[in-house]
Length: 299
Ligand SMILES: *[C@@H]1O[C@H](CO)[C@@H](O)[C@H](O)[C@H]1NC(C)=O
Ligand SMILES: *[C@@H]1O[C@H](CO)[C@@H](O)[C@H](O)[C@H]1NC(C)=O
Ligand SMILES: *[C@@H]1O[C@H](CO)[C@@H](O)[C@H](O)[C@H]1NC(C)=O
Ligand SMILES: CC(=O)N[C@H]1CO[C@H](CO)[C@@H](O)[C@@H]1O
Image (tube, rainbow, N blue to C red; front, side):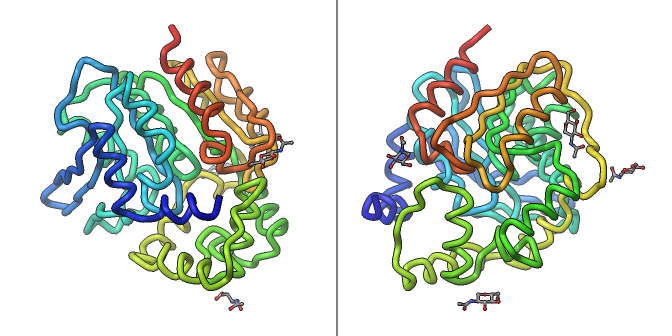
């Protein structure tokens, strides 16, 4: 486990496996006046396969987070894996740090790529972005998968999470800087976290969020979802929606998923993955992939 985990963190290893799935590294200027550049992995040109966008969460680089999905979905879909702003090689000169701005930039990206209709799979923070894309452009977004993402969270959920984690600031859990903090985060996102010695965890923690850390903290602070005492989102009426959740998720408890299923509307269904936590797409890979694949292929 530890060996494959370490190997997968190697950029060269990751890039080779992504390249063998037919994806290339691309950089697209979104708006010259604001200075927004998005880096993504995707097919060199659109094919006849349906496009699917995988949006990563807070954490390591996008292709690491989706490393067990990319090749699998690339068989039947045109898979696009963007880096959200201030992750990987994407950045902006704009001072807007909301997830709504991330959603707007991704929508512009796909317009520029000439892709008019696509499905989205978003995990964690990426699900917040997916929600806004689906709500703002229902004619472009076909199906949506919310993977471990409580778009119906309120300030109370955030407070309860901080209590569970015994932290005073949410970034002390979600953006660890040392081995102790990263070990805690791993225990929150995986049922069986990989065992890694402190010196390695320290190295990862130092590397993980050091690039653009200031801006990433601003992103966390400016998320509009979960800032209010009441839920602020409305149901998505037009899309088929799949919610995928780990039974033992300690970031967003399963009860949120059950509430979310009710909230989002009639076209929503929930799949619970047993013996898995927040990072269930990495913990129970084949179940996650099959469930999402069936949903994307479905009517
Ligand atoms: C880890 O970092 C946090 C926040 O900076 C700090 O409070 C804590 O003492 C650190 N822990 C160790 C073991 O260095
Ligand atoms: C928060 O909720 C209140 C009503 O409880 C509403 O007036 C306000 O606009 C909401 N804020 C956001 C950012 O949605
Ligand atoms: C739960 O999953 C872990 C791997 O994440 C595995 O090691 C363990 O055997 C599983 N337990 C059960 C009861 O299936
Ligand atoms: C925090 C919050 O408002 N959560 C909501 C999530 O969705 C359910 C179902 O509609 C609501 O009952 C919750 O209040």
